[in-house]
Image 1: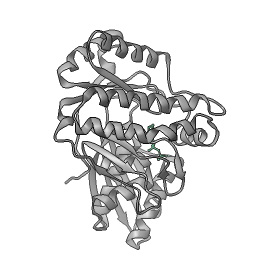
Image 2: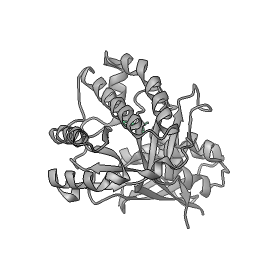
Image 3: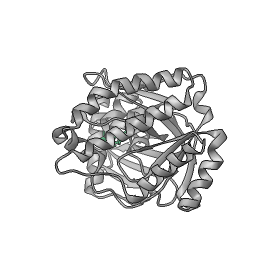
Length: 325
Ligand code: 2P0
Protein backbone atom coordinates (compact mmCIF):
# COMPACT_ATOMS: atom_id res chain seq x y z
CA UNK A 1 0.00 0.00 0.00
CA UNK A 2 1.33 3.44 -1.00
CA UNK A 3 -0.22 6.04 1.28
CA UNK A 4 0.10 9.78 1.93
CA UNK A 5 -1.86 12.49 3.69
CA UNK A 6 -1.70 16.27 3.41
CA UNK A 7 -3.45 19.45 4.51
CA UNK A 8 -3.84 22.60 2.40
CA UNK A 9 -5.58 25.89 3.06
CA UNK A 10 -7.82 27.88 0.82
CA UNK A 11 -6.67 31.08 -0.84
CA UNK A 12 -8.49 34.20 -2.00
CA UNK A 13 -7.23 36.03 -5.06
CA UNK A 14 -6.57 39.76 -4.70
CA UNK A 15 -5.77 39.85 -8.42
CA UNK A 16 -8.04 37.27 -10.04
CA UNK A 17 -7.34 34.33 -12.31
CA UNK A 18 -10.02 34.68 -14.96
CA UNK A 19 -9.72 32.82 -18.24
CA UNK A 20 -7.62 30.01 -19.69
CA UNK A 21 -5.24 30.07 -22.61
CA UNK A 22 -5.00 26.28 -22.59
CA UNK A 23 -7.90 24.30 -21.15
CA UNK A 24 -6.27 20.89 -20.84
CA UNK A 25 -3.01 22.10 -19.27
CA UNK A 26 -4.85 24.80 -17.27
CA UNK A 27 -2.63 27.65 -18.40
CA UNK A 28 -4.19 31.00 -17.44
CA UNK A 29 -4.54 34.13 -19.53
CA UNK A 30 -3.09 36.31 -16.77
CA UNK A 31 -0.96 36.18 -13.63
CA UNK A 32 -2.93 36.23 -10.38
CA UNK A 33 -1.99 36.99 -6.77
CA UNK A 34 -3.63 35.57 -3.67
CA UNK A 35 -3.52 35.44 0.09
CA UNK A 36 -3.60 31.98 1.66
CA UNK A 37 -5.93 31.93 4.67
CA UNK A 38 -6.10 29.90 7.86
CA UNK A 39 -9.84 29.44 8.37
CA UNK A 40 -10.75 26.89 5.71
CA UNK A 41 -8.70 23.87 4.76
CA UNK A 42 -8.85 20.37 3.33
CA UNK A 43 -7.18 17.21 4.57
CA UNK A 44 -6.76 14.48 2.01
CA UNK A 45 -5.45 10.96 2.31
CA UNK A 46 -4.65 8.94 -0.79
CA UNK A 47 -3.71 5.29 -1.10
CA UNK A 48 -2.69 3.46 -4.27
CA UNK A 49 -3.06 -0.32 -4.41
CA UNK A 50 -3.14 -3.23 -6.86
CA UNK A 51 -6.18 -4.40 -4.93
CA UNK A 52 -8.33 -1.47 -6.10
CA UNK A 53 -10.22 -2.00 -9.34
CA UNK A 54 -11.27 1.65 -9.76
CA UNK A 55 -10.60 5.09 -8.29
CA UNK A 56 -12.83 5.95 -5.35
CA UNK A 57 -13.34 9.45 -3.98
CA UNK A 58 -14.86 10.13 -0.55
CA UNK A 59 -15.60 13.73 0.39
CA UNK A 60 -16.72 14.42 3.95
CA UNK A 61 -17.40 10.67 4.43
CA UNK A 62 -19.61 10.40 1.35
CA UNK A 63 -18.66 8.35 -1.68
CA UNK A 64 -18.84 10.80 -4.62
CA UNK A 65 -20.69 10.30 -7.89
CA UNK A 66 -19.17 9.65 -11.28
CA UNK A 67 -18.79 13.32 -12.25
CA UNK A 68 -16.91 14.32 -9.09
CA UNK A 69 -14.77 11.16 -9.27
CA UNK A 70 -13.93 11.84 -12.94
CA UNK A 71 -12.22 15.14 -12.09
CA UNK A 72 -10.11 13.38 -9.44
CA UNK A 73 -9.34 10.42 -11.76
CA UNK A 74 -8.17 12.75 -14.51
CA UNK A 75 -5.79 14.31 -12.02
CA UNK A 76 -4.67 10.90 -10.71
CA UNK A 77 -3.90 9.83 -14.30
CA UNK A 78 -1.35 12.66 -14.51
CA UNK A 79 0.17 11.51 -11.21
CA UNK A 80 0.21 7.84 -12.32
CA UNK A 81 1.99 8.77 -15.51
CA UNK A 82 4.66 10.64 -13.54
CA UNK A 83 5.09 7.68 -11.17
CA UNK A 84 4.97 5.01 -13.88
CA UNK A 85 2.18 3.09 -12.18
CA UNK A 86 -1.30 1.94 -13.15
CA UNK A 87 -2.51 1.34 -9.59
CA UNK A 88 -5.95 2.70 -8.81
CA UNK A 89 -6.45 4.94 -5.78
CA UNK A 90 -8.75 5.64 -2.89
CA UNK A 91 -8.99 9.34 -2.00
CA UNK A 92 -10.48 10.34 1.36
CA UNK A 93 -10.96 14.06 1.69
CA UNK A 94 -12.32 16.15 4.55
CA UNK A 95 -13.22 19.81 4.14
CA UNK A 96 -12.80 21.88 7.27
CA UNK A 97 -15.14 24.76 6.62
CA UNK A 98 -17.85 26.26 8.79
CA UNK A 99 -20.99 24.13 8.61
CA UNK A 100 -22.78 24.51 5.30
CA UNK A 101 -20.75 27.57 4.40
CA UNK A 102 -20.87 26.79 0.71
CA UNK A 103 -17.18 27.50 0.57
CA UNK A 104 -15.82 24.06 -0.28
CA UNK A 105 -12.80 24.96 -2.27
CA UNK A 106 -11.18 23.18 -5.15
CA UNK A 107 -8.01 25.16 -4.39
CA UNK A 108 -7.38 23.59 -0.98
CA UNK A 109 -8.71 20.23 -2.16
CA UNK A 110 -6.46 19.77 -5.17
CA UNK A 111 -3.42 21.25 -3.41
CA UNK A 112 -3.85 18.72 -0.59
CA UNK A 113 -4.33 15.89 -3.09
CA UNK A 114 -1.17 16.86 -4.97
CA UNK A 115 0.80 16.86 -1.71
CA UNK A 116 -0.68 13.53 -0.63
CA UNK A 117 0.15 11.89 -3.99
CA UNK A 118 3.73 13.18 -3.85
CA UNK A 119 4.08 11.55 -0.43
CA UNK A 120 2.28 8.30 -1.29
CA UNK A 121 4.23 7.57 -4.47
CA UNK A 122 7.52 9.12 -3.29
CA UNK A 123 7.61 11.38 -6.35
CA UNK A 124 10.14 13.70 -4.71
CA UNK A 125 8.58 16.86 -6.17
CA UNK A 126 9.73 20.18 -4.73
CA UNK A 127 7.23 22.97 -4.01
CA UNK A 128 7.51 24.48 -7.47
CA UNK A 129 6.88 21.12 -9.14
CA UNK A 130 4.02 20.47 -6.71
CA UNK A 131 2.49 23.81 -7.62
CA UNK A 132 2.65 22.84 -11.31
CA UNK A 133 1.04 19.50 -10.52
CA UNK A 134 -1.74 21.03 -8.37
CA UNK A 135 -2.45 23.46 -11.24
CA UNK A 136 -3.40 20.52 -13.46
CA UNK A 137 -6.20 19.65 -11.00
CA UNK A 138 -7.54 23.17 -10.55
CA UNK A 139 -5.83 26.41 -11.50
CA UNK A 140 -6.18 28.18 -8.18
CA UNK A 141 -4.81 25.09 -6.35
CA UNK A 142 -1.29 25.92 -7.52
CA UNK A 143 -1.39 28.96 -5.21
CA UNK A 144 -2.45 26.92 -2.13
CA UNK A 145 0.88 25.07 -2.07
CA UNK A 146 2.30 28.21 -0.44
CA UNK A 147 1.32 30.38 2.53
CA UNK A 148 0.89 34.17 2.72
CA UNK A 149 0.93 36.24 -0.47
CA UNK A 150 1.39 34.07 -3.56
CA UNK A 151 1.73 34.92 -7.25
CA UNK A 152 0.84 32.47 -10.02
CA UNK A 153 3.05 33.10 -13.04
CA UNK A 154 0.91 32.40 -16.07
CA UNK A 155 3.90 31.08 -18.05
CA UNK A 156 3.54 29.77 -21.59
CA UNK A 157 3.66 25.99 -21.13
CA UNK A 158 3.35 23.33 -18.43
CA UNK A 159 6.85 23.93 -17.14
CA UNK A 160 6.66 27.72 -16.84
CA UNK A 161 3.22 28.06 -15.20
CA UNK A 162 3.45 27.79 -11.39
CA UNK A 163 3.04 29.82 -8.22
CA UNK A 164 5.61 31.18 -5.77
CA UNK A 165 5.45 33.14 -2.52
CA UNK A 166 5.82 36.92 -2.56
CA UNK A 167 8.03 38.28 0.20
CA UNK A 168 6.19 40.80 2.32
CA UNK A 169 8.14 41.31 5.56
CA UNK A 170 5.16 40.17 7.61
CA UNK A 171 2.63 42.65 6.11
CA UNK A 172 0.03 39.87 5.90
CA UNK A 173 0.18 39.39 9.68
CA UNK A 174 -1.60 42.73 10.09
CA UNK A 175 -4.49 41.72 7.83
CA UNK A 176 -7.76 39.88 8.23
CA UNK A 177 -10.28 38.69 5.68
CA UNK A 178 -13.91 38.64 6.78
CA UNK A 179 -16.07 36.13 4.91
CA UNK A 180 -19.74 37.02 4.55
CA UNK A 181 -21.61 33.78 3.91
CA UNK A 182 -24.57 35.07 1.97
CA UNK A 183 -25.79 32.05 0.07
CA UNK A 184 -25.16 28.36 0.54
CA UNK A 185 -26.72 27.17 -2.68
CA UNK A 186 -24.67 25.60 -5.41
CA UNK A 187 -23.82 28.16 -8.06
CA UNK A 188 -25.61 28.17 -11.44
CA UNK A 189 -22.46 28.80 -13.45
CA UNK A 190 -19.28 27.05 -12.26
CA UNK A 191 -16.12 29.13 -12.37
CA UNK A 192 -14.77 26.81 -15.06
CA UNK A 193 -17.81 27.37 -17.31
CA UNK A 194 -18.04 31.04 -16.37
CA UNK A 195 -14.49 31.88 -17.35
CA UNK A 196 -14.76 29.91 -20.58
CA UNK A 197 -17.97 31.68 -21.59
CA UNK A 198 -16.44 35.05 -20.76
CA UNK A 199 -13.25 34.45 -22.76
CA UNK A 200 -15.25 33.23 -25.76
CA UNK A 201 -18.09 35.77 -25.83
CA UNK A 202 -17.60 38.83 -23.61
CA UNK A 203 -16.72 42.06 -25.40
CA UNK A 204 -15.38 43.30 -22.03
CA UNK A 205 -12.81 40.49 -21.78
CA UNK A 206 -10.14 42.37 -23.75
CA UNK A 207 -10.52 45.26 -21.27
CA UNK A 208 -9.78 42.80 -18.48
CA UNK A 209 -6.63 41.57 -20.22
CA UNK A 210 -5.50 45.10 -21.07
CA UNK A 211 -5.59 46.25 -17.44
CA UNK A 212 -4.76 43.25 -15.28
CA UNK A 213 -0.98 43.65 -15.54
CA UNK A 214 -1.13 47.23 -14.28
CA UNK A 215 -3.33 46.06 -11.38
CA UNK A 216 -0.84 43.34 -10.53
CA UNK A 217 2.06 45.78 -10.58
CA UNK A 218 0.17 48.19 -8.32
CA UNK A 219 -0.78 45.43 -5.89
CA UNK A 220 2.82 44.25 -5.65
CA UNK A 221 3.88 47.84 -4.95
CA UNK A 222 1.26 47.98 -2.19
CA UNK A 223 2.72 44.83 -0.60
CA UNK A 224 6.27 46.12 -0.93
CA UNK A 225 5.43 49.47 0.69
CA UNK A 226 2.87 47.98 3.14
CA UNK A 227 0.29 50.41 1.81
CA UNK A 228 -3.06 49.02 2.92
CA UNK A 229 -5.16 51.59 1.09
CA UNK A 230 -3.45 50.89 -2.22
CA UNK A 231 -3.72 47.14 -1.59
CA UNK A 232 -7.44 47.35 -0.87
CA UNK A 233 -8.33 49.76 -3.67
CA UNK A 234 -6.44 47.70 -6.22
CA UNK A 235 -7.99 44.43 -5.05
CA UNK A 236 -11.51 45.87 -5.05
CA UNK A 237 -11.17 47.37 -8.53
CA UNK A 238 -9.69 44.21 -9.97
CA UNK A 239 -12.52 42.10 -8.56
CA UNK A 240 -15.16 44.47 -9.90
CA UNK A 241 -13.58 44.33 -13.35
CA UNK A 242 -13.60 40.54 -13.33
CA UNK A 243 -17.28 40.53 -12.45
CA UNK A 244 -17.94 43.21 -15.06
CA UNK A 245 -16.82 40.85 -17.82
CA UNK A 246 -19.63 38.41 -17.01
CA UNK A 247 -22.32 41.01 -17.78
CA UNK A 248 -21.20 41.28 -21.39
CA UNK A 249 -20.97 37.50 -21.94
CA UNK A 250 -23.49 35.69 -24.14
CA UNK A 251 -25.64 34.59 -22.46
CA UNK A 252 -24.85 37.11 -19.71
CA UNK A 253 -24.57 36.06 -16.10
CA UNK A 254 -23.59 37.40 -12.71
CA UNK A 255 -22.45 35.86 -9.43
CA UNK A 256 -23.92 38.76 -7.45
CA UNK A 257 -27.04 38.41 -5.33
CA UNK A 258 -29.05 41.23 -3.72
CA UNK A 259 -27.20 40.52 -0.46
CA UNK A 260 -23.84 40.85 -2.25
CA UNK A 261 -24.81 44.38 -3.29
CA UNK A 262 -25.97 45.16 0.24
CA UNK A 263 -22.58 44.00 1.58
CA UNK A 264 -20.63 46.05 -0.99
CA UNK A 265 -22.58 49.17 -0.03
CA UNK A 266 -21.93 48.50 3.66
CA UNK A 267 -18.19 48.33 2.93
CA UNK A 268 -18.40 51.74 1.20
CA UNK A 269 -20.38 53.12 4.14
CA UNK A 270 -17.73 51.88 6.57
CA UNK A 271 -15.06 53.63 4.50
CA UNK A 272 -17.08 56.85 4.61
CA UNK A 273 -17.05 56.52 8.40
CA UNK A 274 -13.25 56.32 8.31
CA UNK A 275 -12.88 52.54 8.59
CA UNK A 276 -10.54 51.36 5.82
CA UNK A 277 -11.89 48.07 4.40
CA UNK A 278 -12.34 46.71 0.88
CA UNK A 279 -14.32 43.89 -0.74
CA UNK A 280 -13.71 41.19 -3.27
CA UNK A 281 -15.85 38.36 -4.68
CA UNK A 282 -15.22 35.12 -6.52
CA UNK A 283 -17.43 32.82 -8.57
CA UNK A 284 -20.32 33.03 -6.12
CA UNK A 285 -22.39 35.53 -4.11
CA UNK A 286 -20.27 35.51 -0.92
CA UNK A 287 -18.38 38.72 -0.22
CA UNK A 288 -14.94 38.84 1.39
CA UNK A 289 -13.83 41.99 3.19
CA UNK A 290 -10.15 42.83 3.63
CA UNK A 291 -9.35 44.83 6.74
CA UNK A 292 -6.44 45.55 9.05
CA UNK A 293 -6.63 43.66 12.35
CA UNK A 294 -7.10 46.97 14.28
CA UNK A 295 -10.49 47.47 12.62
CA UNK A 296 -11.61 43.85 12.56
CA UNK A 297 -14.05 44.12 15.48
CA UNK A 298 -15.89 47.08 13.95
CA UNK A 299 -16.22 45.28 10.60
CA UNK A 300 -17.45 42.08 12.24
CA UNK A 301 -20.04 43.92 14.36
CA UNK A 302 -21.30 45.87 11.36
CA UNK A 303 -21.90 42.74 9.30
CA UNK A 304 -23.25 40.69 12.19
CA UNK A 305 -25.89 43.42 12.62
CA UNK A 306 -26.60 43.64 8.89
CA UNK A 307 -26.81 39.84 8.39
CA UNK A 308 -26.25 37.48 11.35
CA UNK A 309 -23.19 36.61 13.38
CA UNK A 310 -23.23 33.03 12.00
CA UNK A 311 -22.75 34.48 8.50
CA UNK A 312 -19.59 36.35 9.46
CA UNK A 313 -16.32 34.41 9.70
CA UNK A 314 -12.88 35.93 10.01
CA UNK A 315 -9.69 34.48 8.64
CA UNK A 316 -6.04 35.42 8.87
CA UNK A 317 -3.01 34.66 6.73
CA UNK A 318 -2.41 30.92 6.61
CA UNK A 319 0.41 28.48 5.83
CA UNK A 320 1.22 26.40 2.77
CA UNK A 321 0.48 22.74 2.14
CA UNK A 322 1.87 20.35 4.74
CA UNK A 323 2.24 16.59 4.99
CA UNK A 324 0.48 15.22 8.04
CA UNK A 325 0.70 12.01 10.14
C1 2P0 B 1 -9.33 33.03 -8.50
N1 2P0 B 1 -11.35 31.88 -9.35
O1 2P0 B 1 -8.31 33.61 -8.90
C2 2P0 B 1 -10.51 33.04 -9.44
C3 2P0 B 1 -11.43 34.19 -9.21
C4 2P0 B 1 -12.74 32.23 -9.31
C5 2P0 B 1 -12.80 33.69 -9.49
O2 2P0 B 1 -9.67 30.44 -9.45
O3 2P0 B 1 -11.09 25.62 -13.93
O4 2P0 B 1 -11.61 26.43 -9.47
O5 2P0 B 1 -10.28 24.42 -11.88
O6 2P0 B 1 -8.83 26.09 -13.04
O7 2P0 B 1 -9.28 27.30 -9.96
C6 2P0 B 1 -11.74 29.46 -9.45
O8 2P0 B 1 -11.31 28.69 -10.48
O9 2P0 B 1 -10.88 26.84 -11.85
C7 2P0 B 1 -10.87 30.63 -9.42
P1 2P0 B 1 -10.23 25.69 -12.73
P2 2P0 B 1 -10.70 27.22 -10.35
O10 2P0 B 1 -9.40 32.53 -7.36
